[in-house]
Image (cartoon, rainbow over all chains, first blue to last red; front, side):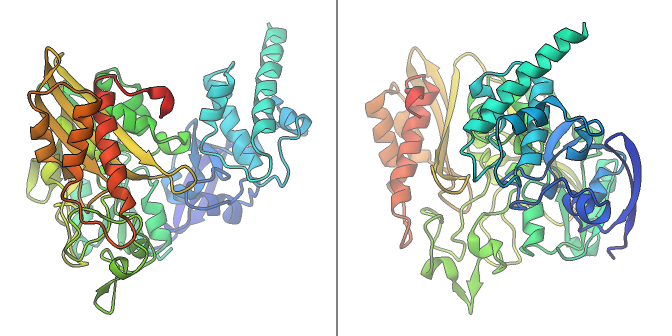
Amino acid sequence: MAKKRVVTTTINGDTHEFLCQPRQTLLETLRDVLGLTGTKEGCSNGNCGACTVHLNGRPVDSCLVLGVEVEGAEIRTIEGVACGSHLDEVQEAFLEGAALQCGICTPGFIMQTESLLDENPNPTEDEIRFYLAGNLCRCTGYDKIVRSVQCAAEKRQTANVGDH
Amino acid sequence: MRPFEYARPQTEAEAVELLSDHDGKTAVLAGGTDIMNLLRRDAIQPRRLVDIKHISSMQGIRQADGGVLVGSLVTLEDAAESPLLAEHRSVLQVAHAHKAIQIQQAGTLAGDLCQLPHCWYFRNGYGLLGMENGLSMAEAGDNRYHAIFGNRGPAKFVSGSRFAPAMIAWGAKVRVVGPEGEEFIPLEYFFATPKTDRQNVTVLRPGQLVTHVWLPSRTADIVSGAYEVLELNGLDRPQAAAAVTLKMQSGIVRDARIVMGHVAPTPWVAQEAANALIGQSVNEDTASRVGDIAVAGATPLSMNGFKVQMARAAVKRSLLRAVGQLDEALV
């Protein structure tokens, strides 16, 4: 019972093979087995969204997923957002807009925002607030976060126009 | 979390076999939005977790037998976006009431129907009935979120399902497979009130699982509505809820189904209230009166008398919402 299993998965574009017990969550696996400690543990019951990562392109609370469930899946974590030392638009906007204080919720907010902007590059304030409803921040009062998301959306659109 | 085995079947038959082992001390894993918390707190202790997410027959929404067949792996988000469910308004209203995208896109409709109670005595390891020394902890303790109907037996918790009231009002059935084959069970008879900790909150037997939910199609004369009373600064679950499906003819109700949620150990069909609505039009007055009838038999516990008013309001507002008379700006 409860033998360790080998799990093969793609994390931030790289193939990883690791051992984990069925009872370990994806969050524990990322942090404790793979050393990817950018993903944070908040409530550990699916309320706060601090541990949000992308699983096959969709945002999930990694505390509600088992490590063994991600066999064959594609995962993107906060470590896969920046390109080397080059921050992406969302990270830059959060820094410039002071959208964080203690920072525990920030990786989750950034992953959720990445997902929002992939789906909807130009969201309204209402759409932003609804999309981020599963992410809790106890420091900022959300306004700075919402403004930073708006700013990130603008930055990304400008960058995309520049590309063409 | 305690140790358990993990299995990933590819077919319904494999899942049934895997679930039947260990004397049925097994559990189904789909979206994981609730079971992970139950496991973490030792509220349930399965020896094997059967991950059904890779069973292709349980995916997707399609038309079947004069209705819509919703696979057990269909998420709240899939349901909310499906054109096939666009006219089942009450179901969509409940889907949209789940605010977190992370939960909407992981949680499944069938998982919601099979959800275990959110009773804090159960969740903290005192068993399904929350007993200590043979006494109900909810009866003597903090029972503000517990049942106001059907609570004379040992079960004081409320059914955890948010979709069941709307789906029962629609006349839904669940397709269940198990060691003895498949069966279709009307959702109204799917739920059970346990009398001992060894019994369950549904009629599912060891080895059985829900593979699909079937909802009848909407015809032009049918309207539906759901209303959940949520706590503003509290738990992200309704305190009381109601859903209605009405058959209308020239503004008059010809047939009605009213089902309350989060008020009893099972979804609670308000038959007398529904009967009282037949032959009437729906307006503030009739909706209020029907709300009164729906809660007339309530037997609140020591701390949850306030839920009677919430249930009454939920019935009234779900009726008004069904006929487009609820001021949505106020809710």
